[in-house]
Image (tube, rainbow, N blue to C red; front, top):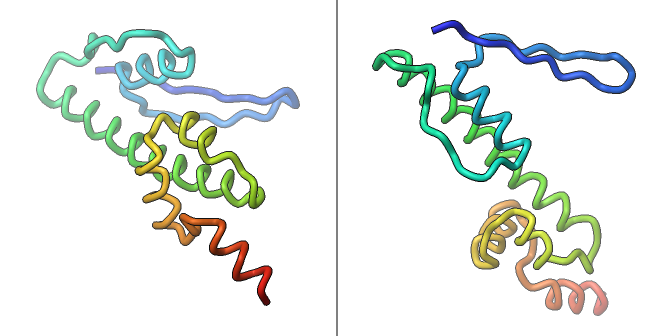
Length: 122
């Protein structure tokens, strides 16, 4: 299986290149970025080794993006005491209960009223 590479550039002409991307992961990533409806199974990987390499690379990307999403959620919540947690949960495609678990995991108060009251009392 021939691996692919991707170049990502900005308006100033700066480029970053990533090598050794499995073709099926590259296709899935492009479809995800383009918000294509429907997920296709792997088409290029046919052998067990190619499929497990695709699975492993996909798993690493998912783990990294999940961690990045959590850090982005926390950053959005820290933008101010009136950050819209419902909008954050919707953009993260997660139920409020999971959002609050993520916020708690990263040290954000789940009840901002208690935090605001204790801060006001000081």
